[in-house]
Image (cartoon, rainbow, N blue to C red; front, top):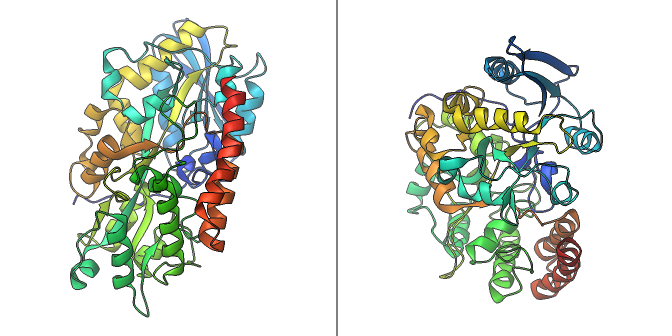
Length: 432
């Protein structure tokens, strides 16, 4: 495949944690403070118009700040001030939205939180996508929509996926697994005294595999309209029990030098397969050119299908903005109309997928397998990492219960019932 530029894995923090964290707090494996001081740069047209402030968290890839400043400077409709925010961006945004001195436009992990929406802190942006709506990653548009109203525009797509060494699978006579049972069998067969079959994080996959296992069983965290618990059937019991089986099988790598979001366990030959993120492919390509493939998490049974979690920062407008219409116009200009800038943002400062399908199709880095396979997974197998109404309390209950199942051997049915009690109470509060 085409040469890929290695990147740091700290741009997309939101895919760093699993269902045990929510909202912008999900952006943990990729983001991060490089130690620079906060930076604010004014840019925009010099011919008058509205004055707008736009906030970003501090991306890790070199050149990203200069890129977004350049986009703002090119906008003819307003004077846009870009503010770069190191440190605890999520906390800073939450506080700023309570005041009139906050940003007009801001990005947030997977769009604004349900609390922001219900408190009226963000503007309804329904219709802003226009005829391009079907061109955006469907799971992301759905994640940023509440009661039929859109509250953010996806900026760029990131995902989790499985990578595997082609040569190791071939030597063992194994095809890429298409079911969870095949995956467990493959992991066992690939395990030797020096190499483990699979790595999914030093917690045994508790933080990242709960969602894929639900989707693989044809289930989800919540029902489609987010009014009820989504996984109190036999499929969830079976799926979570499989994670326990994997944890105790001896074929799972534990105690790796770095966690799942870093490819070093895979590139150092410690495992034959690894659950990780799209952002690691440039490093893997450098280590094993032509000798790796990618796959989605396999289906559990006949009612489910292979799946990958996807996420994106979404661009929103504060309800306290003095120039709401002008702010919405800028968001539309940058993240809907300016496809060349969207491609630049996704591909020139890291390795990510444009949020629009037609733009992704133009990305040279994504035209050849295995990167092209990853794009296909996003469009055909992608699920928003967690639903909008999956609150912090829901996430904590899920993480605690899954930990007890996987690590302690607790009864899956009993733990699911405990999770359901917490989730039911939260949904009553949020939907009340």
